[in-house]
Amino acid sequence: MLSLPAEFEQFHWMVDMVQNVDMGLIVLNRDYEVQVWNGFMTHHSGKHGHDVIGKSIFTIPVQLEDAGFNI
Image 1 (tube, rainbow, N blue to C red):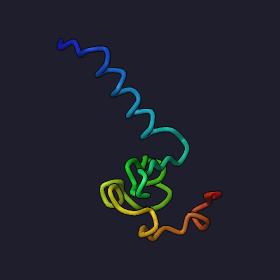
Image 2 (image 1 turned 180 degrees about the vertical axis):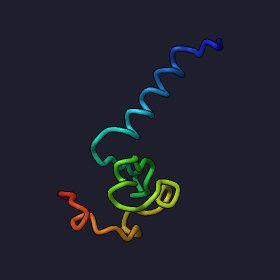
Image 3 (image 1 turned 135 degrees about the horizontal axis):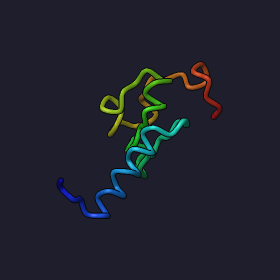
Image 4 (image 1 turned 60 degrees about the horizontal axis):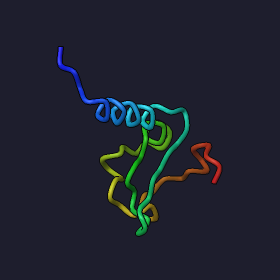
């Protein structure tokens, strides 16, 4: 069995946790472009990460209030 470096295993665990946490998580850069869009956001907004990552949060047509989000 292949042994992975501890740093890689820790990174994999963190990515898995971000994707599966029962809370919406969006990370933006300084230009308000989406860098992270987790699984909760995909499920509740109907928008997949590959469709929104790199785009301005202001151009993504999602009615967060209607999806049950508090802003």
